[in-house]
Image (tube, rainbow, N blue to C red; front, side, top):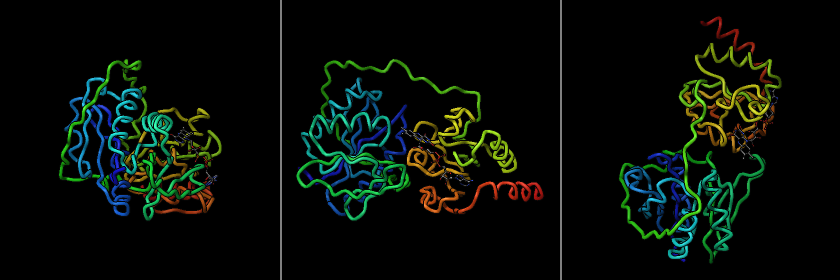
Length: 318
Ligand SMILES: Cc1cc2nc3c(=O)[nH]c(=O)nc-3n(C[C@H](O)[C@H](O)[C@H](O)COP(=O)(O)OP(=O)(O)OC[C@H]3O[C@@H](n4cnc5c(N)ncnc54)[C@H](O)[C@@H]3O)c2cc1C
């Protein structure tokens, strides 16, 4: 087994996904204790240019027309061979639909340990956040096996995994005969509603908003602050707001200047979509709500004690 740490890049339509940079930041942290190089693994077709800003010591590039788009079968087959040949100390995947698709298969196929929901590296160990952020787990790397790790956002910023110096990309041989799975088409989300991913101010509401009628208050606040209302999953699941307003793993990723989170607990699936907001202000009655871990400012109060006076003050200042 080598001491190197692999990071399997995620990319879509010529763009490296932020989770790839987050994984690189964690891998660099891990390498400081365990030693070895941080090696990016890029699977794609004519895609070598997309890794110009990754903070990897080097990149292994598997180029094949069948890997032009994510293909679970093609990825798993290619990565199985690579991991067996190179024997890295650890391999990072995103805790995303793509990462979940391949990390589990590789763990079962190669008999390797898999650590889920890593958010941070602490003294060479993997720190995972599970059960909606209520439990933190520390895992020691396996001594004699490659450890597979899936990574959630929230512990590192994408900028920590970026570099101005492009790494060298070395091709490795990919042999794919035929695949049973192929991409037919991309299905674009419905257009027509506000695009929350480009809003500078977001008023985010969670289950704490209690009823559909109360959403009006958040809308009033959003209008006064020149922003839009977005939501956590329970609000969308109730049909109180359309799916286009959902922030998180199954919704959109947002990067506003201000993210005012009202009655949102801060589950990892939600934080995944808003961890890159410039300023997060969290309002929650529970002092232990995980949202406070990613908040710039927080207030442990009833959101209904805040909204009315805030609206009054903003109206007076307008
Ligand atoms: C595969 C998968 C994908 C998922 N994808 C997403 C996703 O994309 N986006 C997403 O958001 N979730 C997603 N979830 C769900 C996620 O795990 C959480 O269940 C969800 O984010 C919780 O939403 P919440 O914070 O609004 O509700 P809760 O967790 O119930 O939190 C409500 C919070 O409101 C606070 N509160 C209550 N009343 C008040 C009040 N009057 N004043 C102030 N605070 C108050 C409470 O203290 C609590 O912290 C996903 C889950 C799975 C399994």
